[in-house]
Amino acid sequence: MKLLSPGASNPKTAKSERLGYETAILHLAPHTQSGYNVCPSASEGCANACLYHQGRGRMSSVQQARLRKTRWYMEERDTFLDQLRKDIVSLMRRADRKGRTPCVRLNGTSDIRWERHGIMEEFPELQFYDYTKHANRWEIPDNYHLTFSRSECNEKDAVDALTKGRNVAAVFATELPEMWQGVPVHDADEHDLRFLDPVPSVAGLLAKGTAKKDTSGFVIIQRGG
Image (tube, rainbow, N blue to C red; front, side, top):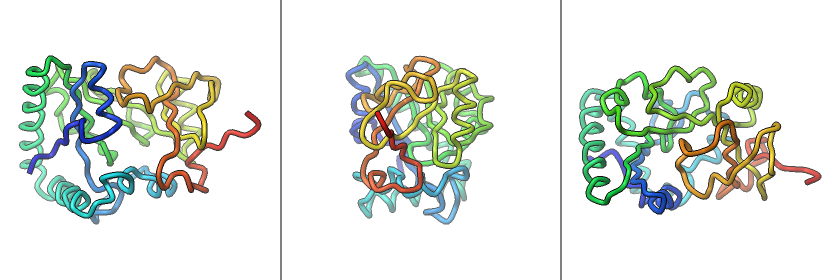
């Protein structure tokens, strides 16, 4: 079973191609869907609005594949990582054939501390990037870019990240403000390459799918303009 999905299979990461990048993403079954918790810092609002419930992720065959991958990661880690290395090599070859720059998101629908597995060090020329809700996850390799993800439960941590010059992603209800917490907001729906974002900045995302019905505070409702 291949682990990495081509970016072209995801509408948002497919936009990265026009910027000259070839993206691959690892999608697992998020939170506790598999019986294992791969999103230990997820809030209730985050779990309910998860991309797992949107688009192709709602299809039974897709969900079953993600469940199998997650259980493989948890139960047979060594063989899982071996396959991941093979998929990364295949991505790099494919990108080279197309004249594009390869990059990888390992937490497409999870929040695993991948820096603990040494994968980034094995591919120092490759750009890795993810979103995370772990507030203490900043000792990472140089080729791994993290954007802190704001939720209804961690706004203090999000503000702290911004004051320390780190980028934050936040979901807004109907339109993106020019500023949030005194930091410029840019449209993060234009592409998924968060490592290209100015620092510090807020990656603004508009609520989609089930997130449009959020009442937890995960989605920020701008009031009074």
